[in-house]
Length: 136
Image (cartoon, rainbow, N blue to C red; front, side, top):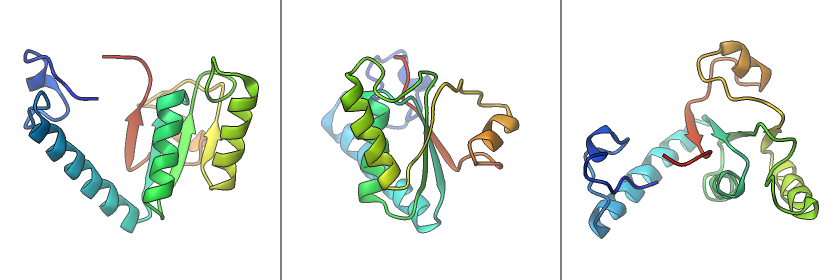
């Protein structure tokens, strides 16, 4: 998400970009697109933490536009799209399975625990993580 509060910008992930303006957003998008493209060329692993609407949308977009990525999504809830109807969650889960996206549910994210990564099939940890839970 863009960092728009001036006081938070120096601490943000993209402190060199001013995302309060269109040019800053454009540069951020182009940088991220280029970085993901490089990851795809190397068949890199990406972990999405959070299987709500944003996490599911993001991982399916990555799968569609960047072939070659090894994609995994996790959530603490028992299925994706937690509050949505079961039919919606089942549809999305079937779609992700069909497209080779690994899913793990009822699982708490533990960033510093290598056993956690082993349990989801990424023994050395992912090459990139996107945290799609909560709001900062």
